[in-house]
Image 1 (spheres, rainbow, N blue to C red):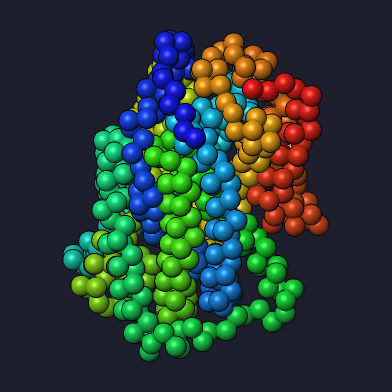
Image 2: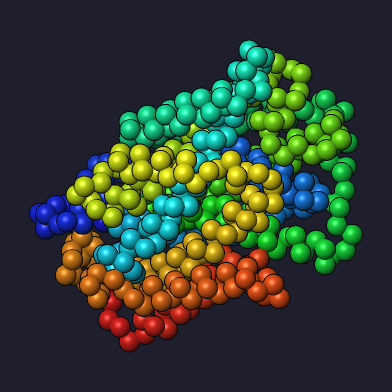
Length: 469
């Protein structure tokens, strides 16, 4: 059932309210199955997805091992994705408002800011990739700028400005871009696969490349952290999915749309990344994991330009949907009366540059084992607490008015539920202990999973005996 809560006067007068954080009214819940499926096509068909797959190949996996790892990771993360989406659809509320139930109306800023900072990093990564794509296209059309660092930075700034412009136009513009571009991007991805494998002598030789792991022990040492990285890839959106599902027509629409869109598209596009990277090893003698670099190496200007335009569109659609919507709302939640969705988007853009994304993309290991696993240790515990609170303690029932009240059911102690904060800290410390203590490295390799379950169990234990509503 979907609640059709009215925005009461008490909500509107609350310092915790602004129109971007308000519950979505029934007449504005227009997103159907296609909208959510196309949203996931738009977010999944992007260069970081390609790099995710190609990084596994560069690390030594066979194509079957890489695809199976990616598919399994996405099926796992689909579960918390759909679970956290439920409250957004039922009550029409975004992530930073939903998380007030478990962390408190003030304490919600802790998970919201953690999620926002990760999104800023992703925004910077995607924007840097988009700038590289524009620079590569210019280099094909105008060879004199191909090796110019100044032009690379100009392209980066230009793509940054384009992202901010789309955000300024609002969520309906994002919805329209996702719906129009989704079929186009899949078609061009298939074209890129055909083109590069043809240069390598066909798909057969490409897929014959064996695994480099000689024993099962060697494989699992690489597989476990890789699987955590696959889950970590979408652990961000698994938290803030209510930002999108609050516009859903029904629970069925968001569940089927996500189930059809996420694992299928990620697996298809990952296969393209796997095959093209394997083909690059046959063509150049080494695996080229960055598709922008690869397209710049190949002497096919027309096809390269078409592919780069598609990658540029893919990067734009992913960036604004996955990496701007959430932090814009999250930063707005810090001071709803002063920070709007647009202002939050601008803050995201600035922090995204300050994080220096070009360093995060220095190599495949830094991308998968540093960036993806590192932040999954922060987000897994938050997901565990949210799901335990909503489904186990509250049985999917929330008091919407109290979510906007400083002295309501979710005010706890000064607006902070310190039990949730303590459970969050336990999950993060246990996961990161493996990074500091080498014999416990396996704790870090399982960072998202350990953080999720440890924080959920600790939270339920600390909340035992507390009356909730």
